[in-house]
Length: 94
Image 1 (cartoon, rainbow, N blue to C red):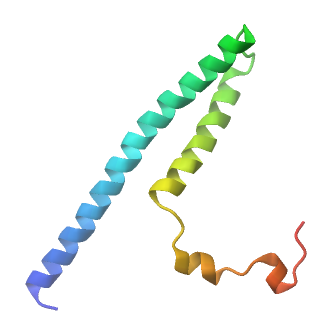
Image 2: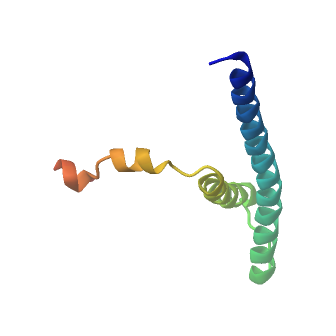
């Protein structure tokens, strides 16, 4: 690989990394705002605030963050195909 090919490869990796950084940052902002809106909406419907508001906020934020990560960076098909299911290996699921 000559110098120009290496520079192009490094540049492509840097661009991809910057895109992921941007996607995750914007996604985090939207996820935080959505979590706050969802919790406020639930509390308004309920008519009073939750005693453990921070815990409920964290649960909602965690679920939305996991969904966001799966959308932005899903598990590669090659990896998901290489992992055997429990019923294929004969192991019991507990």
